[in-house]
Amino acid sequence: MNFKKIFLLLALVTLMAMVVACGNNDTASEKNEESTNQIETEQEIQEEKLSGSVVIDGSGTVYPLMARIAEEYMVEVEPNVSVEVSRAGTSAGMKKYVVGETDFSNASREIKEEEIAELEANNIDSKEFKIALDGMTLVINPQNDWATEMTEEEITTMFVTGAIKDNDEVLWSDIRPEWPAEKINFYGPNENHGTYEFFVEVLLQKQDLVNGINLQQEYSTLVNLVSEDKNGIAFFGYGYYANNSDKITAVKVDFGNGPVGPSLDTIAEDGEYGPFTRPVFTNLSIDSAKEKAQVKAFAEYVFGEGAGKFAGETGFAPLPKAELQESLEFVKSIK
Image (cartoon, rainbow, N blue to C red; front, side):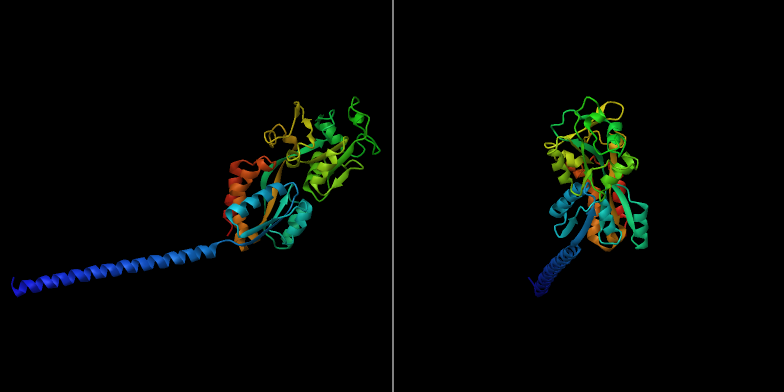
């Protein structure tokens, strides 16, 4: 082999070594860049994790549903977010909401004109959403085996002052002669609750409640009172009956086509229990959703999954999926 060929061979080997070295450098550089990008992505994810609190108050009727949604959200979705759900009652909760003390206000009746005016006066942008359907339920003591079925007229009449008697001594036999001549003890939620307002304003058409009715703040108290009183009758949302059906009995109501009991199948605005069906609501502060990422994210969960998933579990009939989807799209559009 002559010197010229040897020289060319050495040059070729040197060139190949340089190419391999450059390739290794490029690979190392790419790996370093990928590692850097991964670290930056992980940092961005950490920065985007939600935290802070969401403050909710209002309806005691809606409370079991919203509390269940909040529980699932904090455990399974955003453990760094604290969703605080209270149950002062619809009207009491609204008093906090209209001055900006809460992010959501649950309600078992529609928002009132004066509440809207207060929100506007305080420059709070708000949106009312339906969240589920509830059935107004009349409950009696399990020992009461005579009033298990009543007509709509009998119920709405017996709860009105002076409609049956001018005094407080309304007897079961005043409703139907064959029933016991024993005094009826009336119970219900107090004026803080939207359930009270719906019952009086819609079902009783704004007539005064019967004299001597025992009104309570806590629904659990009403359940206990009726469960211990053979002559007691109370009204409240279906969920509180469903969760205590071992202690109290739901009255079947005849709206003209035979007695119908409240259930997840009959509670619907156009269903068999329709006359005693009502939507329940949550009101969202648009300002809070704009200013606090955790509020908007929780609102998206409520309408995207929570309300539909947990309505039945907590004693409510779920809204149609299309209606919940419409609410979700509105929340997503908040910027």
